[in-house]
Image 1 (cartoon, rainbow, N blue to C red):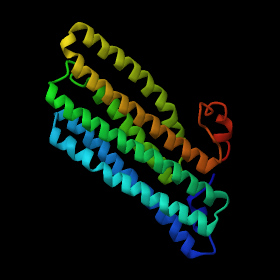
Image 2 (image 1 turned 45 degrees about the vertical axis):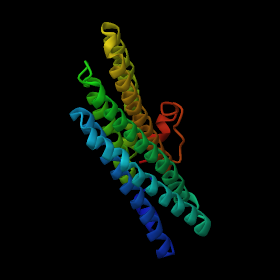
Image 3 (image 1 turned 120 degrees about the vertical axis):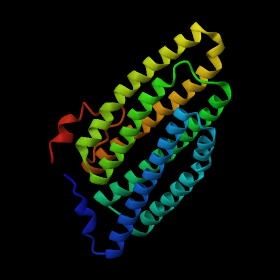
Image 4 (image 1 turned 120 degrees about the horizontal axis):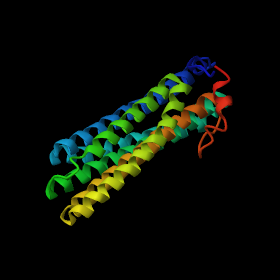
Length: 240
């Protein structure tokens, strides 16, 4: 198994510091995105449009962090020309950085739907589906980031497998909301806003899954995207 210590054994102490700084910046961005998602969900549960608007306004901070990390990655690639595990680390951070920025965007979309819902009235569903799926994807995101911080392949694999359950629950939730619309057409506008929020949460789950897949790539050097996790199962768990 690729250990974290491998990133601390370069001839250049400065290179060690640059890699560690880059990794810490990415994890800091991950923490910021987690806060955005939590705040967006809390605002929706409370129908607090003011808190939702604050989430939207803070999305710029996530975008700025993304650009700073991209710039740092480009600088390291140009100056250090890393190879082997160091190159995988930088490439993984580039990819995770993109997923985190998109999670921030989706959290902002959830907040925007809260503002619209606060103007249109309470949903007849009482946001049960959003509360449940929101909790699931928040846990996926936290575990994916923990897996990256610890280089924990098993935790990353669990996140990838968990995305299947989120997709199943998303489909069930959408069918339930359609039923509400059929029962009372006056609720169509409110339910549509809720559906858009659910769609954003499902996409957050997808991006958390992507982050976990990047962890497997970083540690094992294996690409498990596009359903290849089962195909490569033995190779993922063989070298600990």
